Length: 316
Image 1 (cartoon, rainbow, N blue to C red):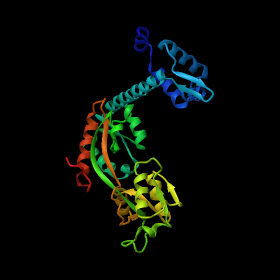
Image 2: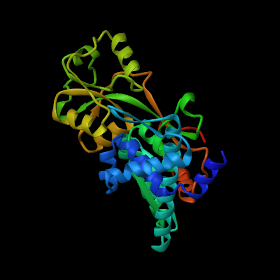
Image 3: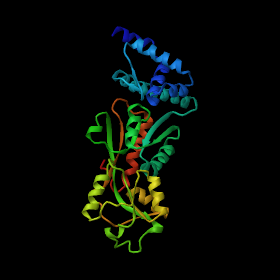
Image 4: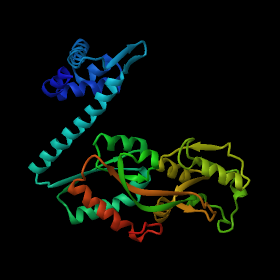
């Protein structure tokens, strides 16, 4: 243990962490060497020195490439976090030099990036122009990984269930019911009285298997005696889904706020069919292990203020 303590404190450098993260990302010496702009023998030598200094192996070699050992998984996880914190420090130092006082890095779901977040960012910059805003758009699994490593301060997305909430604090913002939507130029003539059966020959845009709303949607179809559509596309891309609805005779499940946004552009229209069990619970999440920066706290307050007028806004 004394050797391990000494090596961690005196010899483990950021360049070593960059090497370990690159090897984990590529699982191949040659590709990691190319990415780091060093030779493959140099990568092998550096890894051997790190493993010798620590006293245990970090990667196992196999015909399929490199594989992390339990020790390697631990050190790579912390390396990602430390490198992210160093990147934050670098960015804040640059920002201070350029007169920027605060920064906030926020991750968001694609649908939310189209509806809620433009309003939030606009309000933040109106009241705090010196706050730098860095955004990342991804699905929830990727956003949670970025939050764990410290690459983002906040997530604005789907509220976590209990199994995912052990390392985050969260606040519910609003509930966004899903509705069925079509492109306005492909809307049926009898839209006010349309029934489920009239949609059977449409192209259906469905969320993929394993997504949050796939099973509830299948249940709703079954309850309305609609067989699972053979003519379907599976997609979670809001932009792609909107594009398909605009370009062909299709129907898709979208959050109400997204449909309202694109209806205002003359592109989508919602169908008056009941989806009683389908609603996204949208909230803000941040790490329990790190205090929120002043910029992140300010964004959280503006999020609370911005959702007040929404139909499904959470009570404050």
